[in-house]
Length: 213
Image (cartoon, rainbow, N blue to C red; front, side, top):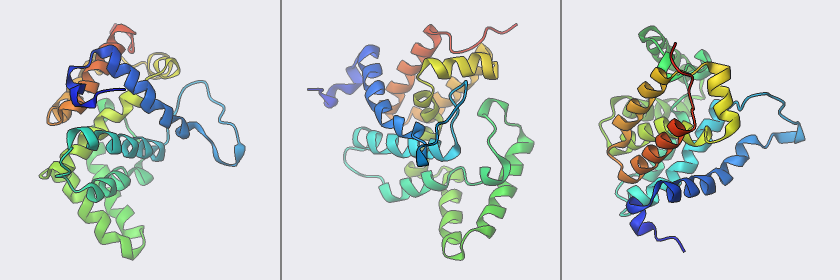
């Protein structure tokens, strides 16, 4: 029986074992409806699948980083649901490649998404995403940290490593930038950061990037 009260003292091996257990639930990302196989060389992911991953991790880390239930969990789940809504219009750009112009385009796209959504949802989508953008509440900071951390869980496979190295040409410099970015957001949540550190060390030791030329 695992003692979650001592999770901050777990070894990297114990953390990675837990990651594997969590990733059992991630298998739902790859179950295509209507029994149509997904044929692809690399491990892709839709934005909606990323949202599912974040919701799964939210339920997990809320139990460990907020055991007294001080955060508003319903608000967290709503922010997760809508957090990438602008990508309906813009598609996705990885963090390490996103420019200031693309950030501004995302804000403009979000206004279009809200305008085209059912009127009964428009105010709640706008309010929840404004809270997430300003990062003034602990709930918003929690969601932002999850948004940064979730890809490390999704990419915990050899297929994903091949996609990063051979498909994207992900470099060591880009890897370092992304991990530093994750650290800045997860540092407010000790258990989440424990996982981030273990996953970063695993990815470094297993060459999850191409060497810079």
